[in-house]
Figure (spheres, protein in one colour):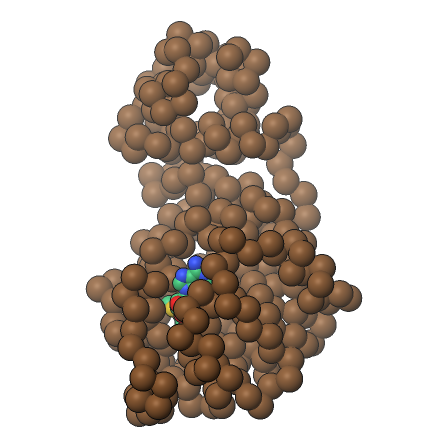
Length: 286
Ligand code: SAM
């Protein structure tokens, strides 16, 4: 069904199915007709591709993905939307809806079962309450995917796509740069959603790198160190890692020294190579 971004059509669908928005599930639906075709076009929804969508709402983006990709598998947590989607996506035979929490879904199995012979991309207008955990999961799972194209809050987008070694970065920035090449594609104003959130958004794309950086012997420990480094935002690397990972200060201090860094360095000042070197040195000492 086209025109799912039309407010009149949305209201009719809501009345027919007695549906109301759930704030808790991050339900801000797109009502700007130009946005979904752009996400689909720029997000690899095309011949030869299968697309995983996270959070369908009433199917406005699903519709654009299904027009372009060979197959779409969409995961939506809200069971009240199942009868709605049966209506709004009835014309497509290349769409499968799974009523589940994406964080509890085995995506490796899904890809193997649903996308044989296809390249795979992820596209979504993400629920904002769980943006970082979903992105971290998609990357850290090492899924066989080409790209992740998602709408996020503008500030989150800046943090996700900021280069290493800049003030805006956080733990998620390190993960994003470790696994992919990130890019902000375009901005989307708050008025493009119903209900309108309090902040503007942007669409970002992570092109998954074929190879991750050299030098990491234990990826789990590397990301534990990265999370520990940013756990206490305004602290130095020394204080944050020692407090959040429960490691004696003298040991963290030695790892910092062995990496050739100043004891007062802050986590956001480290390059990828320095983070890797620091985590390897820390692992040897503890
Ligand atoms: N794609 C639609 C659009 O653009 O209008 C809806 C986007 S809305 C921001 C986020 C959607 O994600 C909602 O439909 C919500 O129910 C769903 N959602 C929230 N948490 C989820 C989770 N853990 N797993 C799967 N879907 C989830």
